[in-house]
Image (tube, rainbow, N blue to C red; front, side, top):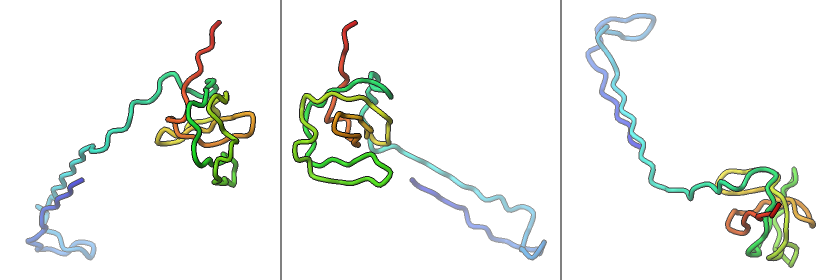
Length: 116
């Protein structure tokens, strides 16, 4: 992000304790360019959607009010089925599994397609 400010000079009067000439107009130019591209959101996934684990994460973080980060010692395995509880920023999801609720990255699971 680039910011540029024009210099303010030529003060002639004092008004309310601040020098003022009446013709000062600050020029501000703001330019933002997006450099990092995030993957498109998974449109099938939303709160309440059933999911299936496709890859076991090495570490898991609980989605409790006091989260705990621990090594995955076989708690979350490929093939486990759960439901999405909430969405967090950066493709992070709170997923309710049979062994508890964990924060998982979207690359570790996919939407489970149920037949009617």
